[in-house]
Image (cartoon, rainbow, N blue to C red):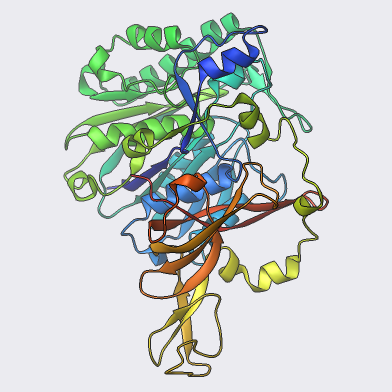
Length: 480
């Protein structure tokens, strides 16, 4: 049996109401979709969100067993640097794994999931982590600005402990230019909406879904839940009606609560469906982007072993903070660059140092004294415990998965930050170890001495002169 053995998701903390966008840009083009959308913080991107979803997915899983990692995104921060490699390093996976980026189409998420299942089925590997994440920017005043949301999902695929077995798939592929970006484009070019609706969404998704059912001799009555994306709320309902779906069979749309999350959208919908699924349920998930992939999963009894043990979709959706400033939203995405001053200048990045200390930086590895058990970060040759002082008796120790307490903190209004003030805290980790880290996803008034914190992988700086994003770990109040 091949299929999903674990799942996770990540929705950023910030939400911006489309009324806020309309208040700023409604004079030019009013948002046609109600509700709100998820917005990545200024220090988040598709890589950091993929790591967050991966952490959620790998909760309680032996990471040494992961043999392959696929990352799907149409918004990779690099054009020539494998982002799956960064995600794998941050998740502290073995260096002896296969990694690959899937990109250039919003159906890349389902393509990566299918590739992972195929790799396990072929016997090449036994466990594949598939992450899908996107952080797309829409040009101010465009429909995409209001529609695009940020988020990520992750699935572990294997042949043991399967919670949802892959029953079959069907794909269609077309060079249908509804939305595209060329080499130097930041924003998408779009065709006319009516053409996209009539010739794209309402044709490709039903074709893939119908092809899957026909291929495996099934009917819609055999399916418990159907997940699919659509940028248009009216057509979203029309697709379900065209497939003769009962409203209860259609997974609740996320356009009004999260926005369209690109490659991650059908994957996040699949996570949401799995959170509510019962053993025996069949879940059909379809993607969209230059065609469509349709995948059919059957939920097993193993689902009960992971139920409630992931933050997943529902918990992240409920944990949010309102972003009330449209101008701040633009600065988060660097659509409106803000003055950095001398204190905001960074670089040059020492690439060789980053390589030598890659586990310290990307995986947050320190050391633990074999003689007395004292952890410390960064790794040291001499034990920091004054009652020990052992030399060269250290073993690797990961702090990324450790909870902590805020020993002390400060807000710095002189240091540059896109979201001032810059906040720092002295973190005491559970089990030992102390270090100063940036604090993110919080406001200064919300910080309290001895409050719990957890680690989150973020962009620490941007070395613009050399085209390098510096990633590191920050502290954040736990999402509940």
